[in-house]
Every structure is written in C-alpha cells, then in structure tokens.
Image 1 (tube, one colour):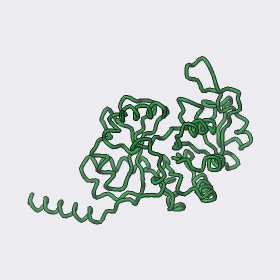
Image 2 (cartoon, one colour):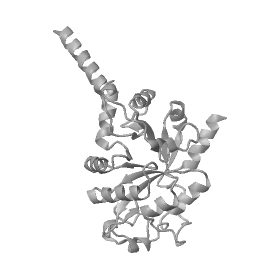
Image 3 (cartoon, rainbow, N blue to C red):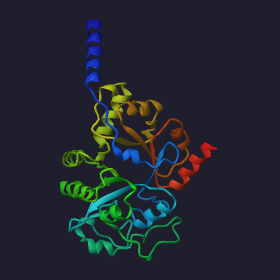
Image 4 (cartoon, rainbow, N blue to C red):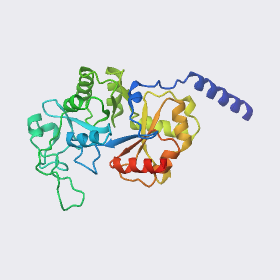
Length: 292
C-alpha cells in the first residue's frame, strides 16, 4: 500500500510539474539599472535621505544615477492619483486629514517636507515648497525611471485609473504594480494584462510554502516579482534555494531591506535580484566594496 501511495504521489508530482508554466520575462526587467548584478530600488525615493514619495527625492536620485523607485499611490477625493503612503496626511505633511477626503488642489497645498528629519531636531526640508506629486507628474518628468508602484487604495476605481494613466503615457514597460489586496491585484491584472505585477500576500505565502516543501516546480505564477524580507519569525526566508527556485519559474526575488545594511553582502553573494532600501547610497557603497 505504501508503495502504491508513493508511486501515486510521484506520478502526480510529475504531471503537475509538466503542466505548470514559468512566467515569461517581462520587458520591464530589461530596463533595470544594474549597479552590480543587483537592482537597487529606492523605497519611497529613499525616505531616510529625503522627504518620501516626492519629486524632490526623485530629482536627487536622478543626479546620482539611481533610477529605480518604489512609490505609494492613493486616490484623492476628485479621483486623482497622488503619491502618499498613509491613509492620512499627518505623518508626512503639516496637516491632519484623510487623503481620500481632500481634492488635489488641497493636497498640493500641503508641505510634504514638513516632518522629515534625520536627527529629530532639524527639519531641513520644511517650508521650501516640497509638495505631494501626482502620478501623472512622475510619469511625465521621470519617464525612464523604473517605477515599482504600490497601490494602497483597495478599491477598483483606483486600479482602473492607474491602468488608464499607464497606458496614456505609454509606460507599460517602465512600471510594475503591487497591492496588499488579492482582489484588487486580480482586478488590475484582468484590465491591464500587459503590465508586470508583483505577488500579492496570498501568492507570496503560497510560493514560500510550496518552496519549503520542495514543491515549487508544480506552481504556475501569475506574477513576475516577489518582495520579501530576509527574515520572517526569526527564520531566514531568502536563501540560495529560494532564489534558484524562483528563477526556474521566471520570478524575480527582491529583498525588503529598508534600513539594514549588515546582511547585504549575503544577499549579493547568493544572487538576489533586487534590494528595496530607504538608504540606497549605503547599499551602493556596500556593493562597490564587495567588488574591490
């Protein structure tokens, strides 16, 4: 009986593996700016260095030759896509309000550099005209930037407007979209199938579990990229085996390494495809040192 069960399991595994398909390489990844063999993505534009999600930050990155950014998008009351992470404006601006309850002109009047400080004493970028930008501004002014877009509004209208704006600006090959909502992510894929997407939380868990059980060969991914921290619950998640398993499925693996630089050498050694960081200059410096 045990033999029959084993043979059945092996046959099932073989059939599922044969039926599964890897993800195709999306043109988005052909535009990667390679600092070494790893793409460095400035989270929120490098939020430890400049006010987050602002064109001011992106301009500083451009001068430094960094053109990959991870940005957060929400919808204003008058249905304009703007760059801001939180539901409310008080953490990053000089006013407390709900983003979805303000029109664009009201959001643009806020000081997006109001709270930025690197020492909790000085506020270098306060009252110098840094504002909340629209997504259209970013598409227009930074057309060659790789844009890793996190859609923070969990409603279909936001995803539909995002799809429309990307197509209007012929930006299909310069953006990749993610969402914490599985339903929103699926809706976006249905209406914008040509645009690269990241794994949603459920897809991430599924792939990690299958990989842990050595079953990733049976998986057919609907996404092009998986973003994960180096550790979860004290266990290392990003391993050489995970990276190789993902590569066999056409999936890129990016490490969420926002402010920690001590483990970057390990990630580079084992072929991580990208590092998402609040401190891109420190990461690039570490990469250069590993090349010396």
